[in-house]
Image 1: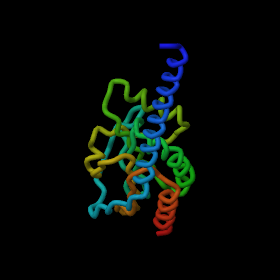
Image 2 (image 1 turned 135 degrees about the vertical axis):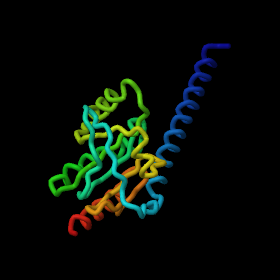
Image 3 (image 1 turned 90 degrees about the vertical axis):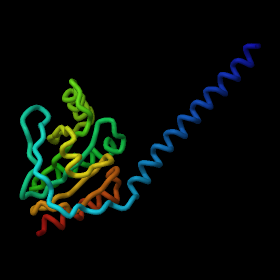
Image 4 (image 1 turned 30 degrees about the horizontal axis):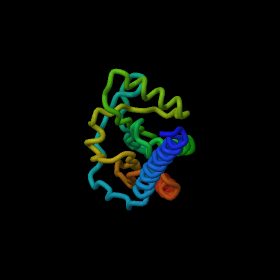
Length: 185
């Protein structure tokens, strides 16, 4: 086969590969957008469970009681979680001085180097909030089936807002409105 024909075939192969990559990327983005547009799931009717999980870096951290708390379930491998994390960081910085707590729950599988992986993820993304490591206890207690899942718990320990999916601008506005309502009580 002449060199010219080989070049044309290689070029066509490359184009097909790039087309497939583009279609796959568009599919992932489309699914993330659609997930963000789903209506929020029904809120649990029972009080939040008492939970204490290992804190990244050592010790234990309990889910705060009597405080407005954002509970955020995520994992390092989760693309919608990675999209949401800078927004979670900003919300925490803005609302922490007003008494809002963040209970950030990493749901990655247990592994010997999990602590290091999570630390590197946080560092690489400029995230400074405290993180607890779930062994399935918190995910199970809150019925978390998809990531990311974010809950807002009021001072009485009642879930007053819940969202599954990336924290898109409309959902961020919803969360801010819910935080402001709860803080005015």
